[in-house]
Image 1 (cartoon, rainbow, N blue to C red):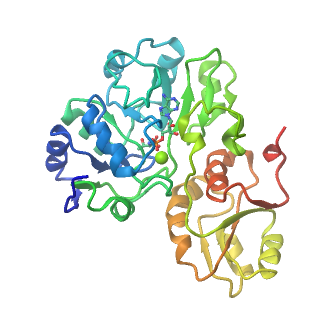
Image 2 (tube, rainbow, N blue to C red; image 1 turned 90 degrees about the horizontal axis):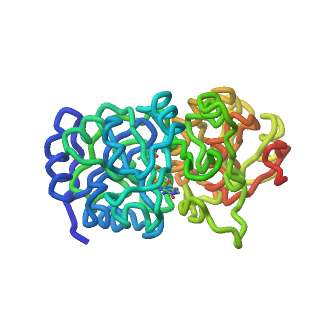
Length: 345
Ligand code: TXA
Ligand code: MG
């Protein structure tokens, strides 16, 4: 792999990043969800560099990012009415739609599948970069494969320094978890990854129910083939072993007192924790705040002077996108009063 003296660019000096992308290199770019590792989605060579820089398995397809709706037609072989309704309601924004791909999408980009994931991000820098390049940008999250997704330029630098020429600094990502991924190829819309746009919001726009894939909150059974290749890989894992805890601040602190573990908790828990080493990722009833801080805290958790960490997790069904990431980062270890929607049916 070619090595670089990686530079972080400010948002008013985009041209070196545009030139790098136009000459087939890959760069780190901000989006409203997480930072992406971008390259020309239509170039086999650029897309191969994305897989190499991340250390990503080659069967795990990339999301193709566009800036305007006209760009989608050449990329897909079918643009159904449901896709048009969702694009109208949620684009630009944190929704990825999977559709049958056209010949223009290289097999490398789609991981050998006959479908392609498309998203129109709303971050102004990402929008400007796609327009300036003149081609759609393939961009997975800009972390090393398996690590928590990056929500600042510095996270990208920590993971990819030397492997990319540029990272554009757009400040911290406002949403903090990756886009909602919706499969629109089958009979019914199927949610493959929860994100800021909820299945209820999608359902309201389509006027039909959205099927929630059974693996979103559960370990994938070994004999089930994954509709989204990303589902089968380990995700978001800090080095620190994590266990999730469901219950009140009193029960959570009580459980911690029995251990010599650290805490990844809500702000409200702090007064209960006395000398226990702790990091908080937001207020208990503020899911947007938890989502924005989650990945930064999953990166920081390794700095706690303990051997294990108990994570206080929300018991609200509205926390679907946060729980989906937390469960994976904790390898599905859970304790406390498990909410009913987490029980396997
Ligand atoms: O918010 C986001 O979506 C961020 C930013 C950078 O846009 N990107 C992102 O990409 O999260 P990535 O590669 O980390 O996650 C894409 C997920 C993977 O789980 C992948 O398996 C799935 O989407 N995916 C992509 N194309 C697919 C396809 N054709 N069929 C099924 N799943 C697909
Ligand atoms: Mg990712």
